[in-house]
Amino acid sequence: MKIALLSRNPNLYSSRRLIEAAEAKGHEVQVIDVLRAYMNITSHKPSIHYKGEELDNFDVVIPRIGASVTFYGAAILRQFEMMGVFPLNESVAITRSRDKLRSLQLLSREGIGLPVTGYASKPDDIKDMIKMVGGAPLVIKLLEGTQGIGVVLAETQKAAESVIEGFMGVKANILVQEYISEANGADIRCFVIGGKVVASIKRQAAKGEFRSNIHRGGTAEVIRITPEERSTVVRAAKIMGLNVAGVDILRSNHGPVVMEVNSSPGLEGIEKATGKDIAGMIIEYCEKSSKPGKTATRGKG
Ligand SMILES: Nc1ncnc2c1ncn2[C@@H]1O[C@H](COP(=O)(O)OP(=O)(O)OP(=O)(O)O)[C@@H](O)[C@H]1O
Ligand SMILES: [Mg+2]
Image 1 (cartoon, rainbow, N blue to C red):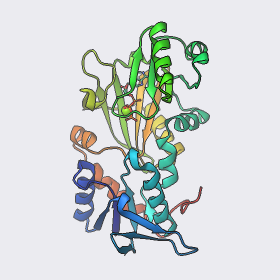
Image 2 (image 1 turned 30 degrees about the horizontal axis):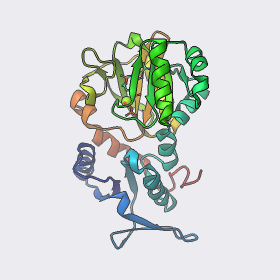
Image 3 (image 1 turned 90 degrees about the vertical axis):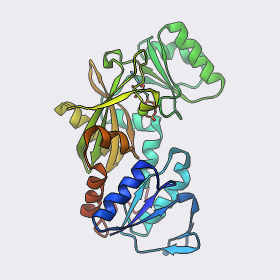
């Protein structure tokens, strides 16, 4: 197969591993920096150009689109889809999952377990919203945050009110969420490929910290998940329309709750903790799925 890897940096662990795994299986990989790709949106003959050359004859496109280039990256990926190239994850699914609020709404519609979550715009509504989500302690999250930055635990009603007021004052979009204290600072990252959980790791927060992000000092180890967790995770990926996803869950005393569904899950943490060849599994999934005409939407929607 001829594979286009959309990545701004081929030296990142995940990109390197995907290239390695594809080449080991006899495939050809071209790394494409999406910001250097440009497109011709002509009737019936969509094309993509890259550094002066037309991109052609790809069988598969693997998007590794960073959060900061979602808009442009999704447009380039959509163009590949319209040319009939099989995308590992489709552009619509990536755009959907990048919007945390929209994702939670879609998951809630399908009855997936979630932390009770509120969203409001005006400071006048803070007190009632806090009541609505069950009162302090509460987790307050910046919608645009990553790596645990912008995720705050407010232990008292007063703290919650002032943190929310502060964020609203600087016009930041925030979610207000039930604090799952029984998770004891641990979350579980489940790696899904083609409707199956292929690996799961537990990330444990450092002492005195509730956020389990590795960037915040968390540590990772292999964990076995329960059948209920497995079915929740697989359904969550399916609802988002993602073939490959990193689904983060917390163990709450009302069952597994989904925190997030990530469309470009990193490979480093999960491969190093489990010793599994996740990159190889992704390439095998592409081999199985990239038959011509298998692109479900071809950029529609
Ligand atoms: N409602 C909650 N109850 C308990 N712990 C939580 C809750 N929400 C988040 N956490 C902890 O905080 C960490 C960071 O939260 P979250 O994953 O939502 O934000 P992020 O990592 O900054 O964003 P992203 O995952 O999009 O990069 C989680 O991994 C989890 O350990
Ligand atoms: Mg996270």
